[in-house]
Amino acid sequence: MTVQTGARLLEGAPIAGEIRSRVATDVAEFAATHGRPPALAVVVCGRSAPSMVYLERILKACASVGIDSRFVDVPGDDAATLGAGLAAAVRELSADPAVSGIIVQMPLPAGINLRVVVDEIDPLKDIDGIHPLNAGLLRLGYEGFVPATAHAALEMLERSGATIPGSEAVVIGRSPVVGMPVAFMLAKASATVTVCHSRTRDLAAHTRRADIVVAAAGRPGLVTGDMLKPGAVVIDVGINVLDGKLVGDVDFESARAVASAITPVPGGVGPLTNALLLAHLVRAAQRQAAERPAAAARKPLARSTPTEPADPAERQGAADPDGAP
Ligand code: NAD
Image 1: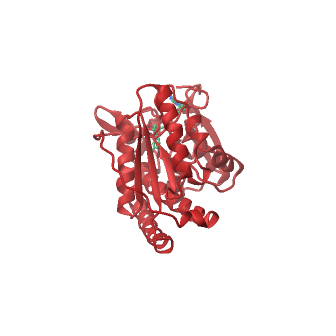
Image 2 (image 1 turned 90 degrees about the vertical axis):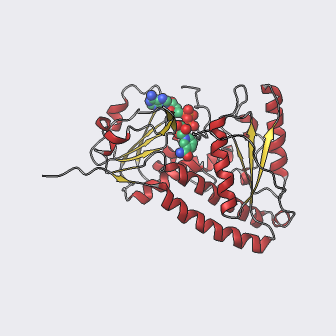
Image 3 (image 1 turned 180 degrees about the vertical axis):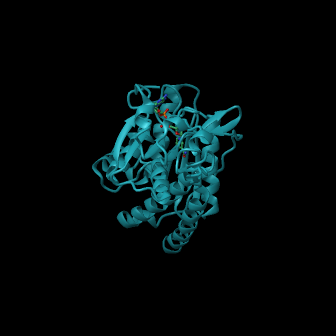
């Protein structure tokens, strides 16, 4: 008789720690060579508490590995002013040789299109992979910057011991920052990929035949244990606040009884996302130094710090491709 002991927990912190310590070494090497550390610029446009928490965690993580950071708060009360300010800020940071990478708070305030950022961001500084050049490189299977969350989901899967080639993988969510990049990366890794979304008729019919389920819908409790194939590997990317607590998209207890491995929320994909973003930043700095050596030798970054209070949630997303909920 087989005794079900519950799925293995795929925790992000140990892997994130490993990545951060490699990043710290690379940062020190970069600083020794170029006379300054790599520098991140974080742009905030119309503050939302959950994303401020996410961004503040990234700034702290930067400090912990010796990465310089700059916080740019775009002023304005209406979409037109904020949009123009955002475009100008991203343009200026893209042109500043002291800045190695840029991330912009997502989701953007109502009335401001992601296009504002996409049109202005330097693809070599686009460490979260939103520029069409990077999105296109991913789509074509070449190396560029991929969204850190999608990278974290794949890294977690690879380290889970799951056999990706030939597996049936179901991705829930089709956003340009999470669902679709994960789907492209899984297809590149030779999984057979199904992308489910808000208009999918029978989600459970898809998830029940999946060896790998990646949930990125932003809907607490969307995936329950009875929707999973026994032994499936479950990566929960969702971050939701339910009754004041952080939860994912997967009903953890029921899923854990059926899956072979599962990421917790919090503590799974989130910490890994932050660590990989730092790794992307260092790679951006190295690429710029190699491709634009004159610019890389210039002045260090001026410092500034965020002031907004914290809130127990984090989110970095963008609109669904077709605007579906
Ligand atoms: P989004 O709102 O842009 O996209 C959500 C997607 O889920 C859409 O494609 C939608 O069609 C789909 N969806 C919604 N309801 C559904 C349902 N009932 N059934 C099937 N599909 C459904 O969100 P996003 O930016 O892609 O983020 C997704 C989730 O991942 C959110 O919870 C977000 O907070 C989280 N997130 C986590 C990290 C991290 O580091 N762990 C980073 C970014 C986003």
